[in-house]
Each structure stands twice: as structure tokens, then as C-alpha cells.
Image 1 (cartoon, rainbow, N blue to C red):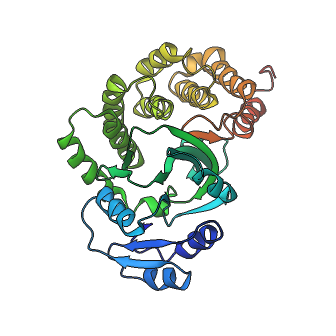
Image 2 (cartoon, rainbow, N blue to C red; image 1 turned 90 degrees about the vertical axis):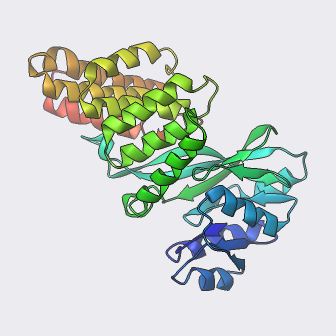
Length: 333
């Protein structure tokens, strides 16, 4: 682990990890709270360095210090929910990269009008590394390796995407990403992450620009393409560019026919369009929205899709349909 000022959550994290590993190593990069003391109390081997201005440099230093055949990389705002018992069997097999499921609590302002306050986004991330694998990138760092990436049913809870935690990271991450983009012009993954940073700041025009540039260069096999596509569609709607949004949706309908997230955002987009086009709201846009959410229910939740939000294929779509039908009793069920 690399940490800084994580007294809020580091004990929770280490307590969840301890039963499944031989050693816990924490590399502190300049905490001014009780992070280091709490980590030692939880049984971790604690080291310190000055913040190097790069997450990959800090990660790689922690891997050097661990000097282990296998490394589970975890952040303080995460914790093992399930699957810890699978780790030792995994490590008895040949070298490859382990991809685990990060289940992130997220705010659902974008899922108005009828969603609950929060939901769970599911991201598949490379976190189990054999000896010798290292990271690259100043922020949103990635494991640099040609080894195969295999999913492991290890599930991590994560609350770092809640607004209270994101607020402290926004300026830092954006600046580091711009430095990475300067070093790697046109890199689609960096552009994708810059779009996400702009979206968090509700700078939707900038988010669309970064997402559009990323889409132009992102290969069809990229694991982030699903998340990129749904976020771009959402941000287009937030800018009021409905023509581009519906054209993009039409172009990608076949690609994402199995994605409840795509149709959920499309339904919200149609509802937003209804607000701006009241003359056609009842005859076109509201039935369109209802049909999109019905498609979500037909598909069902798809947790294997990167960035999928739990409930968009079930209760969140159902809540939106019920809200619409309560206002329009004549709308077909």
C-alpha cells in the first residue's frame, strides 16, 4: 500500500487483508495525521518517503521494499469484501496478472429523477502482481506487463469515489494527468481519465472534448471502452447536445446491446430531452425513455462490464419506470 493521511480508513483496510497475506507493507508519502501509527498497530511494516510526484514511482518503491514473489496492491480506501481465500491457490500457478473487482460506492445525482442516493459501480482492475512487474503513469497508474490478465473473484469494497473523498483529489489528479498527456500526446487512456476528472468537476463541455478525443483513439478491445461510452453519452446530455448524443447512441446501439448502463443513460437522456421539447414529450420522448428502461430490465445487471453500475439492470431502472408510470397512468406497463 501507498498512503497519505488515511486515518479515516486504514485500519478497516488492513483488518480485512491480514487473514490472507504473509506480510502487510505500508509506504507513507507524507502523512500529517495518525496514519502511520494506526498502520503499525494493525500489524503493518511501515516505511516512509517524500511524495515523489508520481503514483507509479511510489508504487514501484513499495514493490521494491516488499521484495515478494506475489503482491496484492490495495488502497487504504478499499477493503476485501470476499475472495481472500483464493489468493494462495492463485499464487501457486504460473506468473500472470490478477484482475479483481473493485465495487465502488458512487453518488447518483446523474441517475435522477427516481434513483436512490447511492449505487455501486463495478470496475475490474489489475491488482495481483508477480515479482518484477512495475507500474507506469503519474496518476491512474497501470501495471506495465505483457503477461496475460486473468480475472480473479476477489472483490474489494471502495468508498473513494464518494464526493467527500473526491473533493480532496480533484486538483491533484488533473494536474498529474496533464503532465502525463504532455509526455504521451493523444494517449486514449489518459484522455479518458481527464474526461472523468472534468466530469467530476461538472465541466461537461471539457469532459465531452476529452472523451471524444479518447474515443477516436481507443481500440475496440480496451476494457474501459464501455465506461467511456456511457460517460460520454451522459455528458453530451448534460451539455444539451441532444443531436450528437442520440446520433452517438444510434451508432453504438449494436455494440452495447448487452449493456443496461447504456440503455439506462439513454433513458435518462430521453427524459431530459422531454423537458426541453414539451410538445413532443408525451408522444415521443417519455415513451422512448420508458422503452429504454424496459430494455435495461430485459438485459439485467451485467457486473462483468467495466464501469457497470449495479441496479441499472434491475431496481434503478424499475424505480424510474414506476416514477414515470405514476405520473402517466396511461403509459403501457
